[in-house]
Image 1 (tube, rainbow, N blue to C red):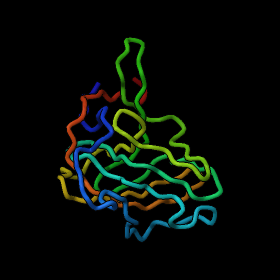
Image 2: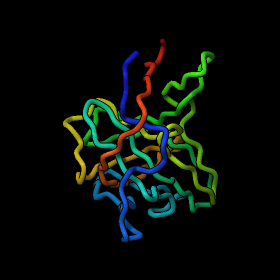
Image 3: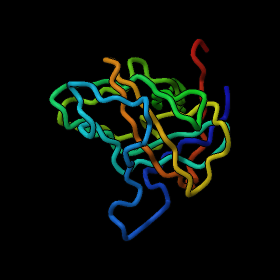
Image 4: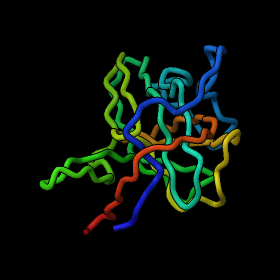
Length: 172
């Protein structure tokens, strides 16, 4: 098992601002990102998105909102800041401890609904960071759905002191 400090149990990233748009994910300028015919650009957004400052691996949180008329499932993604982007969740173990693991089947977001990505719950995991992410940086993500749609988002990096959690690689 690897120890991970990328996630926490509190939902507050520890920052405050009088700007109501602070922390909102902005569309990324990623040439490879393409909207699908069923989910046009801007219909699936990451609201109040942010990435936890860190190195090695870290997580992205926020609220994924699907304004399209089609259910979707986010299965993974890419980022210039990481070797791999996966959808993760927290699962209670028999001994009562919480363990982080890849979410089988991905993140389902029903049409017209929102799903929270939060410390201690579902989140996007950035594995194999290409360098440390520090407070004030931006992270570009291109998430992929089960239909092959690409969702391009940019989120700010924030410092967050969360709980230590464990990561169990596939097959363990």
